[in-house]
Length: 294
Length: 237
Image (cartoon, rainbow over all chains, first blue to last red; front, side):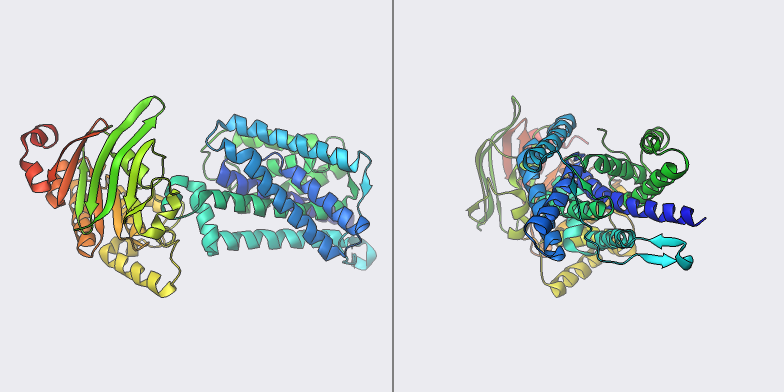
């Protein structure tokens, strides 16, 4: 019984990481109507930056994390500017392929700079493990921190979108760029801001992920990135609560199937969810409507 | 009277099709000027080019004496030029209130925004009743009121309106036109594009007739109402 709780909590924690990545995916999709497949690789970049800052530069943990956030934010803005902005109004397939190209570019740049050998990421989470039920259930500090961060990020984003002028402008742009322009909203700046927020979140996700699963390679971001995409689709792409819910469900599902069915099949199970959702309810759990297909 | 908006030789192309073949007109401060014409004559294109939604290929647009031909669309609201687009284009997943507040996106002073809001609720009591409702659930007429209210939230000096009566029932059409007159009476200059020529000419000071990308007739609205060519082509109801 205790092991079930432990699997469940780990699943929620993994799900919270997926949720944070999925939030970036879903926001960028909502506003730019594109699937940024390079999103997971931004995460990897964030983890490497944090690793280098902490291990090689000897910066303290908060400074290393901040540096990772800054580097990812800038990379997000830069890739949008260089790769995606010129394709505004182009065929969505062209944008999709470009995103895949950016993804490979980032992975191979990382391979070139950091090499293929896995780096052993030292946990950034100073929280001590929690022992419950007389030591029968141990909750690692990483699990606690990740779940809390996920909740804070989702709540913060919801507040930002619904309570601030910039957030409202974002919703306006995601619904109708022309009408938003007529309100005086700078559409390009709003899209850049969305990429910046999404990429900053990816940095946070990268640090949390590598704190729990310390092996860092140039492809570290690829799988979580794709799973976060599944989570965003499951929750209803474009929806912030949906991305959070989808992430957590997926994380639990993955961990429980690893524990009780087969660790080799867990990925297959996760991706069957994508197929099932697309077959049964393509708009996802909380999604409203499908406006565009990719 | 001084011109608030001057359009000189404006040209526009969609691919190889020339939608605007060099049109010139002006709007004086305090006027209601109407642009009438059939479907596809280029009325909407004209407005969209003026407010920077689509780039022109030639010619100039001057607003308050300053060239705005290549100014990014989002900068024009700040200068007092607001546009109520064709098809209303309200933000359907946002509430009526949120739509109105987006209209005031460029304004800073809370007290002034509140003032505009209560003024708009006076003009459009229905918007006050439906304040928390999602804009997408409003009727066509209500959406048109919201689109107009949203544009007014920027406190414009000049309002550009594209087919405000399109698809509305006659009762709503009359209501919308009487509100346009009220807005005008409060000191806002109006450029009105309409297919309902009779209605548009009845409230306008001057008007231009646009035919396949060219201005063919211009003059006082009262004269155009009696013009045989206009009567035959646009007032044949």
